[in-house]
Length: 121
Image (cartoon, rainbow, N blue to C red; front, side, top):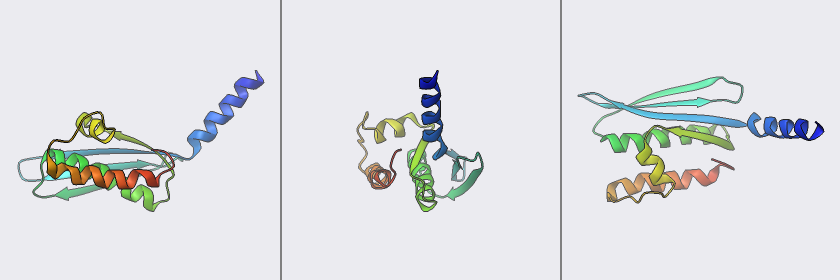
C-alpha cells in the first residue's frame, strides 16, 4: 500500500503544474478564425479567438497552434499538453509526415522554435 500511495502522490505532483492547450480553426465563406483554450492547472480557462483574413485551412491550423503556444510561454508555462484536431499538423510537427508545401515550412519552423522553451510539451 505505501508504494501505491507514493505513486499517487508522484502522479499528483506531475499533473499539478500541467497546463492543457486546445487549438482549432474555423472557416466560413468570408474568413478564417482561430480558437485557443488554455486550461490552467486550477481548472480555470483562458480563451482567445482571432479573426484571420486570406488564409488557407492548413495555414489556420498551424496558426492556431502557434497562437496557443505563445501565450502559454508568456504565462510561464513549463509543462504543456497540446490538443490539436488536425491530424495533418500533429503528424507534421511530430515528424511522422514530411511537409511538401514549402510555404507551410515557416509554420513548422516557428513551432519548433517555441516547443523547446517548455520543459515538456
